[in-house]
Image (cartoon, rainbow, N blue to C red; front, top):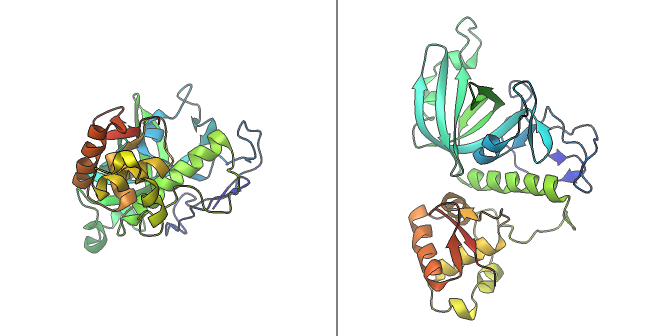
Amino acid sequence: MNYGNYDNQYSTSYGAAGAADGGGFVAGEPQSSQAAGRGGYGKDTVRPMTIKQILDAQQPHPDAEFKSDGEAFAQVTFVGQIRSISTQPTNITYKIDDGTGIIEAKQWIDVNNSDDPSSKMDVDSKSKLVEDGYCRVWGRLKAFNNKRHVGAHIIRPVTDLNEVNYHFLEATAVHLFFTRGAPNGANGAQPGQTNNNGALSREEVASASDSHLSHVSPLARRIFATLKNTPQSNEGLHVQMIASTMGIATNEVYKGAEELVAAGVIFTTVDDNTWAMLDS
């Protein structure tokens, strides 16, 4: 996919070809920008975002377009875990949590249109969207009575949890592009980039094996390497992001993080589930 003049190396095939209402990425018309080297993203493209980014998007007044990082957007895609499913005669509401926030995605049912896929309750496909399962959403951000939700065009189950990792990396890459411009050597490997199975390279693990970490477990050193090499905001990384990046369970992340906190090399930030590195 193409973000203006920036060919993103974290390209992911979402399987959304032919998605309703213009799903998929397209290049926007060139526009002025504060980020060096970026072209216009285009208001009608689909932007990968975290739920926190969606909830924090600016909208000066109810009729204004939404903006994130100073760039207008209309459609979004995100991944998360389904916390609840509420079925109504006219819509199905999914409450979705990605570790950065919770938002509702509403998929409306056109009961008068027999071709509407939402009205066909196919047991095989619908049964895969279950509570505590992961899903990907494409849709438009909307606000009603000061509460935001996503009007979903498509919601499908995530069958490969690596997709969660890919999405967070892609949302981070787009955010950094709009706020800092295209990186130097954008066509090459970036620091902290993981391999296809979400594991850190041997060199990255070794780089975290400093003398002050010699007494902690290999798991803790891997978590330290992940915090050191993964692009992030000043808030650090949430436990779910670390777990998906490393391909391990969240309870393992908590174990290793406790060791690193005790060693005085990381600290909690916005909550007890988010950590950042102490400045060396």
